[in-house]
Image (cartoon, rainbow, N blue to C red; front, side, top):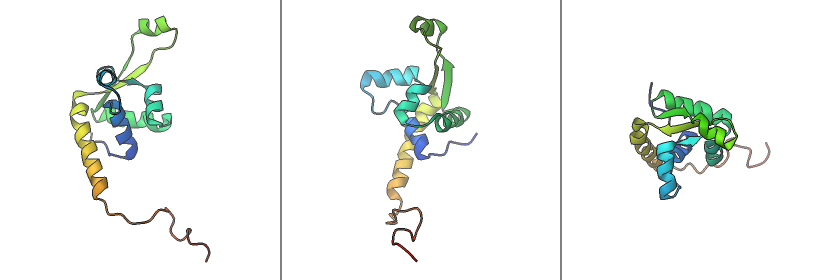
Length: 126
């Protein structure tokens, strides 16, 4: 499959899976264990209908893997098992490069000065 498109949502998810913004110990845990779906949804502020298809595209590209936590952990805590997502080796190598390229492309894009998506509405009437 082709490399994933670096949309703003994709960038947000990759940053979360890289543990960016997390402290040293937490970042290490994110990289090794990953994040479960609800936790990732809260961190990225993305709805399930946006997040999970995006994670599936990253999985199909070989950047993300998913796995279920062990039954005994969930049973101990009295809840259903969680599905975790973490970067693969390929994803851990490519994600920082893709994020840097996307940031550079955004910075190099010319500013149009337009703030509204629909021209002609800001000025008033006809």
